[in-house]
Image 1: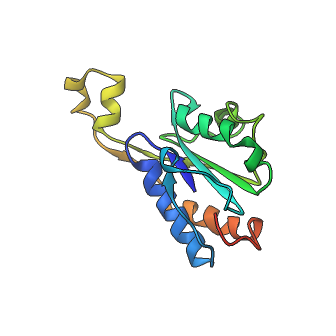
Image 2: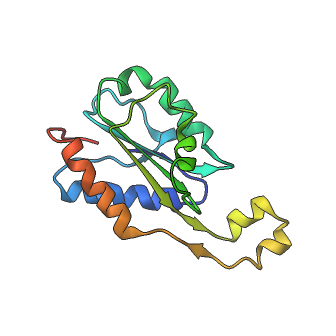
Image 3: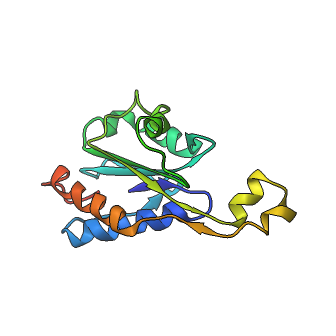
Length: 159
C-alpha cells in the first residue's frame, strides 16, 4: 500500500486498511509513496491520498503516473481522504488526475481529520489556534471497505 498524507490522517487510515487486510490473510506493506522503491514484486496495490484543494497530492499522482505500466498488470484499489467526503459524483472528480493511468477494482472515499495544523494552511495561524479539532473518520466504514477488498484481491498475497 502506498499513500500520501499531509498531517497524518491518511497514514492512520492506510495503517488500519493494512491491518484489516492482514487479518484477512494478506501480506501487506504500508508505505508513504516517497518510500516505495518499486512495485514489481507485488500482486496487488492499494494507493491512498489526502485531498488538498480538491486534488490528490502531487506525489501520489506522480507515483501512479510513473508506475502505470506495472499498475496495469495487477488489481489496484484507490482511496481518498477529505474532511467532508462529498457524495458522488462530486467526489469522483478527486480521481481525475489519475483516471487515465489506472483502472481501480475499488474506490474508497473517506472523511478525514482536520486540526489546527491544517487550519493554518487556510487561515492566519493566530486564528487557526481557535479552530477546534474535527475528526470525521468512520473507522467502521474504513474497515468494512478494507474487508471488501479481500475478494477483489483474492489469490493475491501482497497488497
